Image 1 (cartoon, helix red, strand yellow):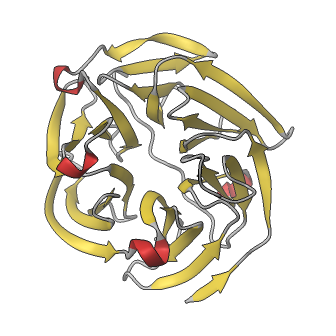
Image 2 (cartoon, rainbow, N blue to C red; image 1 turned 180 degrees about the horizontal axis):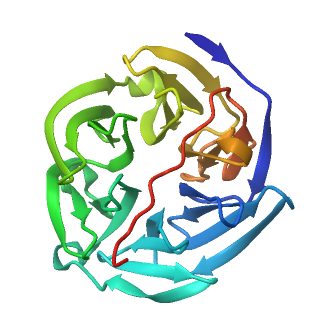
Length: 295
C-alpha cells in the first residue's frame, strides 16, 4: 500500500457545502454534481475550463444519466424528476409517501437500466432509518434494504455478479450477491470496515477498469484504492478534509474527479474545501451504466 499526495488540479472552486453525486456526461463532455445542502447542481466542462451553476430548487441527493442523455434527479420527498436541455422536463415519480420528510442520497443505475437509490432522514441518523430502494424501468419501486444509517456509495463488479454498498454510519462496505436478470440482491457480507479515527467515513465510491474500488473518505481528507480482494493499494491525501464522492471522467475516463464540502463550516477543512479536485490516478474508469426508467 502506498501513501501519496499526487499532482492534482482544482477543476471548479465553488465552495460547495456538500458536493456529491458526480456524474460524467460523455455526450456533453461535462461533469455534473449536486451541492445537496444548498439545493444546487453545477457542471464543469474540462475542454473549456468553464464551470456553471445550472439548477437551484428542491434538494437533489443524487443523479443518474439516462439512456437518452437526460438526467434523473433524485430529490427530497421521494421525487424523481427528469432534467433535459437545462431544465426540469417532468417527473417520473411524484413522491413516495414513506419519504415525505426525508430525502434521497446516493444513487446508481444497474446494468439493465434500473436504479438503486438510498433514502435517509434529515436528522436522527443514529436510529438507522435509512432505506435502499430499487426503481424498476416501468417506474415501480420497492424497498430492498432497511435499517441503514447513511446509504452511500454503490458499484457493480465487472462480472455483474456482485453489488457493493456503503453505509457511512457503520463505516462499512458491504458486498451483495446480485442477479442482473431480476435486479435482486442476495447474500450480504462485510467487504471493508474502517476506523473513523484513522481514515474518516466511507462515502462515495466508483470502480476502475481493473475492478479496483475508489472510495472517498469523508472527514478523512483522502481517497483510498482497494483491489478486488479487499487489499488496500493506495492512500491519496488531498487538501480537503470532507472528500465526499468520486467519479471518472474526461478523455478515456482517465481523470478522477473528487467532490468535497465545506460542512461543518466551523472546522478547518483545508484550502480546497468545497472544490472539485481532479487527478490522474493511473487506471482509467469504466462508463457508468445508464438508467432507462420510463424509456
